[in-house]
Length: 292
Ligand code: G1P
Image 1 (cartoon, rainbow, N blue to C red):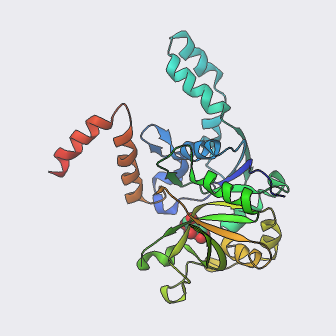
Image 2: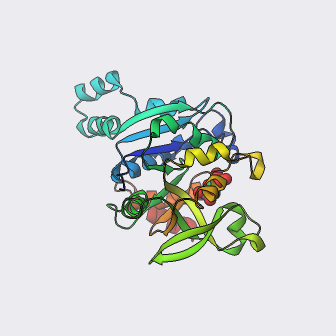
């Protein structure tokens, strides 16, 4: 029997070395896309996908993330006194979206290591894993990518990861999956390699920041040795799991915004800025002038 996906884990402990000096004291997940921090978009995607409980895996200097989702009685009182209803509403929504829990990853041991800290939170249910530095948008907002993955798992059981085709020069930056298509867009995995050289890549299908995983993954993580870069790789644990229970990949519909590097971060701000009701029109006009 399959079970509903209700819990999500968001690793947000990484140093953000590709984003120094800003990431030294400001968590990269707190960088704004226009007026909301990146992490809020990720939490909103989880909530829109039916998730009710979220575990954020954090570390030193990430306290601003906790503050962002915490109650702020004085600020609310101030807004209420000034009749700032819209802002008050926004703040209240932020705190009530989901139950948010926190745990610390004491040492940066890789994505697989971060996921291990979610074991007691997850228990024996399938769970979503959303990487905290990537925002994914879909044309139909009622079908976020995490929802699309959960649909596959709720129908077929096992696990499902989000896939996007990448160009040959980029395969060495991602976990790459190989397998056989079992229905349109759904591929059953038979190979998984973390950041392979082009000649070792089983395909160009890259795992892209969203997963719905069976709780069995924790057993495989326990048995996994450090891999690429000396880190505990989730990809290696998934490769071991796939021999014993089904693991699917879904070529999802949606656009991915990687916030963890400078150029993509600026592009994402332009993308969300152009769509923003307050500034979109003016930004478009301004950009035309700049580019000309
Ligand atoms: C991680 C995973 C990799 C995946 C990538 C993007 O790598 O290890 O398999 O393809 O995220 O989702 P990172 O970007 O953290 O190096």
